[in-house]
Image 1 (cartoon, rainbow over the protein chains, first blue to last red):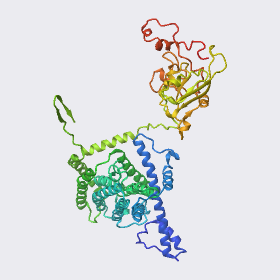
Image 2: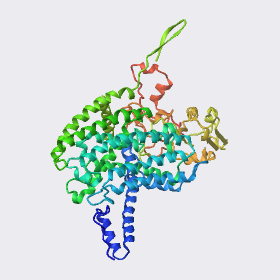
Image 3: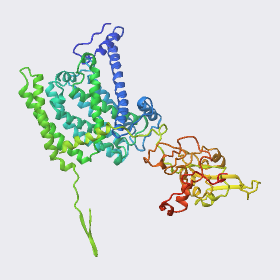
Image 4: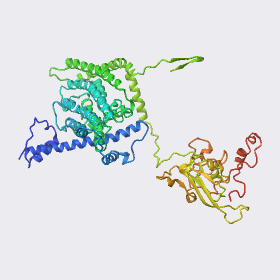
Length: 407
Length: 222
């Protein structure tokens, strides 16, 4: 049997898929070869996500340690590299608890539902040239749709745990997720408009100038919004340990907790990869034909470092400050960015509807000015919301005693 | 400005990222102890102990148990009792050091260790055999002759890390072989001058000729 993959298939862009498909197709029925080749790629992606999560837990703890003048985990293996494995072994051997009165099925389903969207997201990420499982022509839409599933999983976790802290955490997480979805979508809209495509591969190829320079405001909004959607500091009210223990995963232990942790840190990796693809030029760079994977990993690592840096720097915001930051700061910024990009694209694009590198440079110059002005204006507008109001000293009058001031 | 303040905060953390971590990797590296740190293992020199049980009497908690028997030799000539039991119940000890202060023969010292954690309270009692066989790393608490005064050298010199230039802090309890009873001498003459005779002699212009002499009293250690 000689199976031939249609050239218009979304899987055609993947070189490894074609090789496995042709190899398996030479002695197996075509539908079986199709499945086997898919499973091979999925196996690689699942392992990439979980291994990436392990590396990011290690890296985050090391870098965060250095940020706080500590060393971080350094006992297991060189530089503590085996620490995630030790953690995993510990969590695997722990008792798998289920609280009384919990919804058994939903409770067990949550960790799977948290990891699954991440693995699904990796399907459309181009790791290098011709190294994407499915080059969907609606890649950005797919990313937004799939990543929203995690909010359902978080709410399921909170509801099924039969625990008030978990419920509080879930309610906060959903509130944050819904608020930050809007500016993130608006910032991605600008990217789609400039690249004139929703396919991530085309977006990478459209970045003659990385989009972080073309629209810095959209990148800032995307980074802040994604930081909130991942429930990371400074937006981690959903799992604020000083307020509500651990939020929605309070009741999880053992393997389920390991999966939730993997989803949390794998999410950082996947979101960083998406940010690298959309704003930093993905696999493009010198010798990108051969070293594309290196550039991709490097740019992803830079975004991961940014996330860790933010976590090390900013204290946790209150829930009203988070809402104010989203609706009064990020949303106006993303709308201004979108409007500016729309106008620029409308006036600068050529007759074929595409932008040249010179057009991108002009956009970069205009948007830099727009970014600085709008950040200053809106930053001053919401400053009242985030700065602490000083209290006036109160006069306390006691008969026979000189008046003292109590602040 | 709002955005600028956020960048400023990022710069603060970035500056800290470039700094050297000040973690001490404890089992491999150790912070140098203060010489007067009152540690867990009491250091006891049996050769000096007469079995007078002053330590047991002065202990506010009564956790020191001493039993002696006549050694059979002539006590008035300076011989001493034979010690049968010397138990210190460490689990109730508050490390006030009054037993060390009470010892008239400098036979009991505070130790310098801090790693004697046990799983059972029963194991927290230091017996006479443990006291005999333990490595002797005495603390200088109430035994300043170990440190030496200005001009004198301490018995065991370390690098002065806690307070530069202060010779008292050059004594490192753990920095060398255990000290025998002959090495931890009785107080120096200078120490007598200062501590026992009071402050009057400090003001006198002429310094006594025996300054700096190490233990001169004969037979004090025997």
